[in-house]
Length: 161
Image (cartoon, rainbow, N blue to C red; front, side, top):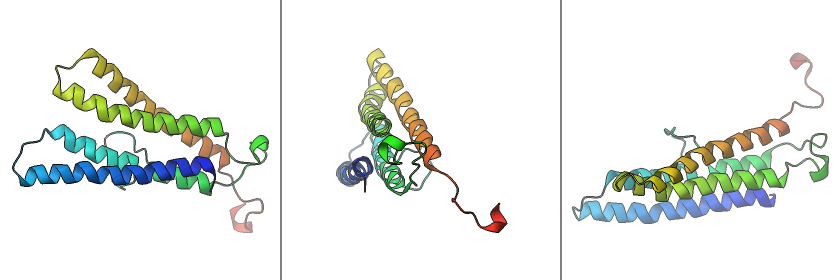
């Protein structure tokens, strides 16, 4: 598995583990009858859905570390398009995708509760806007990479020509 693909898969595994910590805390607080602001449930779900993989649509772009990592690993080589990397995607594009996706997630996990529970501070709103732009941009980069690597078979079956 290429290093870039491992970045996504290992980050996804870390996010999966991290999802259970706040989930357990939220469950314990509920059992003890403590009221927890709803935004923490949303952030807990977002960490699990975006950081790991849950096949459920969400209101934001469905960015998923594990899916992207496995897809980068499984994409066909396109030696004509990427001769410098022996057919693999440009590492700088994958790094941009990784940091935009996970940076956007981290920003959202901090800025959204701050914005929702605070007096709607301008800095929190600005950070939330950056997070809202970073994640779709990461997915656009991934789609571009996958589109460049996706190609038909060299010798298609006669019925598909």
